[in-house]
Image 1 (cartoon, rainbow, N blue to C red):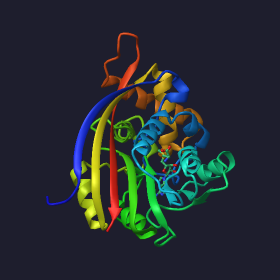
Image 2: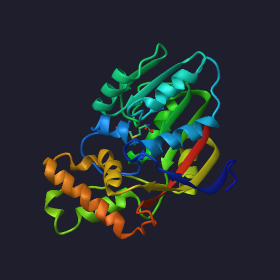
Image 3: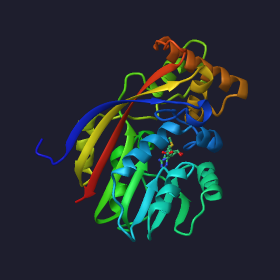
Image 4: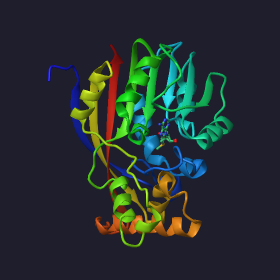
Length: 290
Ligand SMILES: C[S@@+](CC[C@H](N)C(=O)[O-])C[C@H]1O[C@@H](n2cnc3c(N)ncnc32)[C@H](O)[C@@H]1O
């Protein structure tokens, strides 16, 4: 392909010791309210996102004085971790969800840390940041190329990009949600249903980076199996990231999520202790603005 990036694939296991503190979210959801509305549920059930982000941050160097933008900062805990680690420099967290920004602003406070509401496809800064990072967010953005161009525009010359995104995986939550939506029981509740999540392979992502004027330095896919101790843990993981059911009554929302969990269980062989192994594929991207 003539481009300077490397691609690797690895496998590891994550065992979730505590159901609610460490169950997950990630991949999915589908449309409706902009971004995640259940900030507190997300904060309690985003152990996998935390694992993925902190793992990638360990290998990504910040320089003293760096100005950093975290796109899709969510509840702000990862943004706050970076602000803490920067000896000097500032970090800004941006998210499309008003509820997430309110939660982050209230719970994550530091002198070098600010949050604002904004859309990844339309970042209101030009050539301002030394580093732009984004964790478990860009699969929510259908116009991926526009988001990458927007991030490129917000970076200073030679600024660096670090992305963590769930990669293509046959059994992701978006596919499960789509199956349940189209079942006889639920179809009439979603007359205008539209899939609002997007997943890429490493080579597709290399092309997108090239089009958005980035030099891709590495694209690494890693496979992990997360163990959910029981169905309640699986449900706690699914709920905050499925924002397209916000228009349903609470008991209907609960029934829908339970049907999603049952659908996932159909395709999963439980371990001998009853825990539920769910496969996730993480894609980590490091690139530099050309
Ligand atoms: C799964 S959460 C990840 C949050 C955080 N980065 C983490 O790793 O814990 C995805 C976040 O992306 C936000 N989001 C979705 N679409 C977005 C967009 N177009 N622009 C900015 N943020 C967006 C959601 O509101 C949500 O907070």
